[in-house]
Amino acid sequence: MFKFAIPAVAALGLIAVAAQSRATDSTPEAYAAAPAMGWHLSHEDSMAKLAYGVANSDQLALMMTCEPGQAQAVVYGDVHPASPRLVKASMTAGAIDPLSGGLADEARIALEAPVLQKLVHSGKLAVEGDAGHFELTATGDEQRLVREFFAYCGSDTV
Image (tube, rainbow, N blue to C red; front, side, top):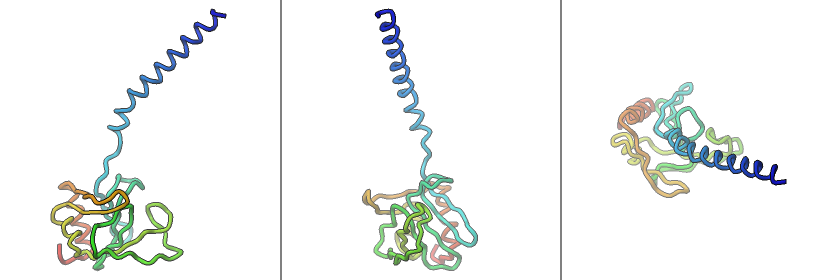
């Protein structure tokens, strides 16, 4: 009986130790490999999209869209600009959120709203969501993308 029990217990112990060391070895790599969030600009037909999230993914905290000459941006996402000028759009049965595929939580905000102009000039956007109030920041290259978005939308205040 012991002939079989001792090797079996030893094998289980080695498997447990290997699994534990593999788990601790991969943890720092998993954190290091986590994609960074940032500002990204894209165009779809005549619409410009400025999003804060992981590039080339559906992991977005905020997305603003506009078309040339519009005075307002449409805002989607888990967070919204912290502004009294933010106007929630009325919901219709056909309104689908491009981020989640569910019903859209759409809002509109004037491109000249102070909170958006602060993003253009300082690279900082005050936002609010379920997690509370905080600030999204843009790097130097990202600030260039932000200015391109507002210039494309036709805001004469940039």
